[in-house]
Length: 444
Image (cartoon, rainbow, N blue to C red; front, side, top):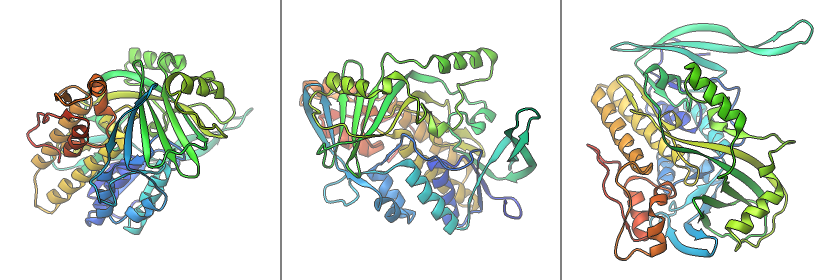
């Protein structure tokens, strides 16, 4: 149940970004409630790596040790094509023990945040939906629906989720980390246009004798960007862009909804945008198709393909909200942006959006800040995402840039695991110049 009285902040959405926002606020002594319409946290999802920048943030929040105990450290990003290696990027500062990508599954990250949140005196309200938001000058009225399972049917019994209880709360601030179909974003009437066509990826996690060490590999092909991740326990993950694949059912549903005025293509859980079941997979997920993809795009991968632990097709849309919020309602993570899969950008950068929002909101509640601080935060991150999506401030080759790297410069912002000054540092290792973004205040 909700605590007595109204919280100071309502966080909508209990994915990784929403959980971090709630934890950050709770640790600053702010009363916070966090809700999610899901039944429980996700059990397997695409996101699997934390940036060096993210690890430093988690250390500030006191939860780093829980993550690193389950993590596989990747310290090098290698750039390949079908012919082999072309360039390497060293991640993090030399000598920094956190100068690595920590490969750890999203469900582990979410479990860690939930545990830390309970220790901080808060908890996720699963099966709670926000059915309406009404902003006012000094607060937001949120209608909370508690969902309950009800048995229905006479001839054939079945269960449905129904609203068991409905009530209103008034909160000074709302943080919308509620993903692709964000109620917060739709309440604010913020447009969420595509900035590039959607991409489908075939994802395979399997046992292998590959010796990948501390290296992740991005593989460029003819209009494709694939990625090979080392995983703990003798596993790896290949993610292949499927240029000829289309989910006709999903595309038809999306078109019908758009024609009907219902908005964007829905997913049951925005953080689990996957297709396939344990017993039935589309043909693109057959083991033969996996071996064909490797032979065509990465023939240098001669390692074994053992038991496949997980396989799925994931649809990645690339979108950017027209703004990241206004007044007392703000967005973070997938509610504000969607990105391609290679660099796990939406989650990692979403953490910092949530952190800055939590810091600004806490300052305002203590009388040490103004709503203008939230405007500045939204402006910074919107500009950074315009750069990451290639809408402005493109990476520029220099006379020292390798021709192969220069050829792929336009693809690299979506592949480098960093943002702001760190992204520029990674690009510089490849001989690329990263011009500043056009923002009043730059992302550090």
